Length: 345
Image 1 (cartoon, helix red, strand yellow):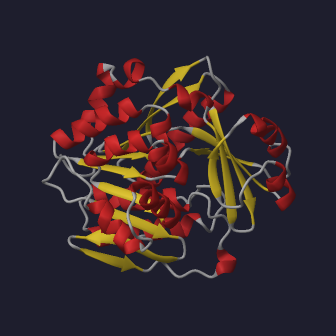
Image 2 (image 1 turned 180 degrees about the vertical axis):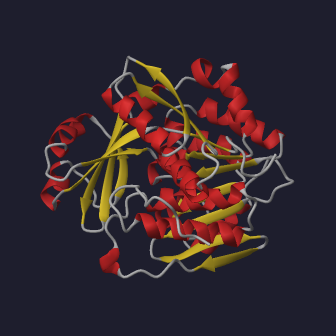
């Protein structure tokens, strides 16, 4: 099996239609939002979704963290199409049709569980300057059912075909039992399971489920804020990001044939990663601050770039370089979008 075969990369998560618009501080204050954050929508945010679509220059993009990363990995690899498989739940509605169309255009092999009790999920990206506040209304994404989708023979065969797996921490709020089933398959077959801390609230409020999955995690991603929150919640006695990475690496692990790799991005500062027994820093691609259009999707893009090289069994340094490249491209565009072809060598 060549590393470039179809369905070599498997992702599962919350497919959301991103609705992004530039807003002002009053808008953030009105809905109690921080400039740079990710939260799940509550009742008081209902009006936000109605208000943001009326803004001038609203953009719609296929989103959801894991789906974004799979899409970027596919873009980085280009050929063959459908290297990336994606599972998640959508509604039988117009937004769902847009998501299916966008997945096809990105050459991702998306197999959605479609239901009609909830509409397709959306994520409002409220942009102020180079900050973005994300409010996710999971809706249909929250309705993913292991027994109605993952367990179906034709779907499970796609899971088995993969060799690299990626699930963002966000999916812990939806179907931890689906994550566990996939994670155990990966571990039992000595393949590579990657996960993301995704947002501070995951480490705080979904700690128990997160720690059930952690022993199966071969590659752990996060940013500096998520790493700090995770360390605090786990009682690590440090705020030093390199030490936090080492402490994460040393958490119990199921498949001992693979040493856990921990990768923490820090925006424009160096990326920190465990390389064997050492913790090494990797500088990001230099960029003029004025060239930054939208940092939304930078983390997803980093993971997508990283995964594209992991699938072809490149060394860790190359995976990180590809991650930095992809993130650098994405932050110079609105939403998690990219030019027709990458220029990565």
